Length: 85
Length: 358
Image (tube, rainbow over all chains, first blue to last red; front, side):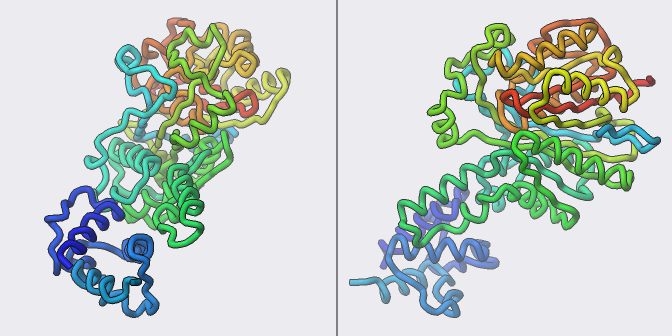
């Protein structure tokens, strides 16, 4: 889980072009949207694509998005639970 | 059309901004020559919030920053409209999106390059940054894109002189676009960058740039110049071009003898430049005559750079070294930007000094 979260932080910075941040500056449980990292709806689409491209994981129910993308830890938990064997 | 006839109000350039391969006279001696004339880019973080900057591709940064420069110089925080012209549009994002379509077999495509691949992203990003909900238009008519953007903005100002309109032109070179042009052998690759290239007449430099102008009908003490007229002609014959130039100047209330400086948009290829250069020589024999595409290269909205240069000449009261081919020693009151693009698209923009009395 720790390695997956470290990979995710690096991939999020690259995919969203967050050049002003380092992986160490993103907390495992820090909110990604709103007052946390300040991501927006286009970033959410980029994260969906990232999950599909890097982990072959799809989000079937869009209603689950806010819960899955709450933090790096929740994304990692979702990947772990849904990643193809 | 000319903008001064029928007692209609003048259109003033209150502020302008340019990002180009050339910034000032000093650059000509120091800037490195290369196969592409690429912009000398500013520190974007000084102009655009980092959170918005991260999603902007290079051409958007160029256009938005040039717009911010014009607004700052004009001391107008919010324009009454934004009108941009771009011939190529957002090619970097288009290339990125299309490449991913191929490599990812049309699945799981990133949204940002797609959203930003459209031509009107530049003007809309500027509007988003400013929170400007006023008129927002983008013109994409190849090498007439900037001229039509400028004309649209001028018409809005003439309709309501109290309005302020931001008009600009922006185009970029990308690795993909340069590679494609190179395959066709369109641009020279030797990096020659001087007035000498026009005598030689053997090739055109690939260029890029962004230039924006804050226009208004209400004069102020700090105005840079006025826009007296805009004209476009597609593939004119020599006779038609000469007649239309005369008509254009006449409708602005002047003759060729009144034009102090002609900035000719010769590109460096003798067959494309011939008509323009010959007309400049015969019709504007008493004027100072200069070139500008050794400074900015050839691209669809090079006229925007030329207008910035022309307005700067009027503001400074002198023509920078490295521009003049023939110096008539006249104080600039009228500058005529006379562009051509690969011998097909011709345009005229007449600029006038705010201190001119005639």
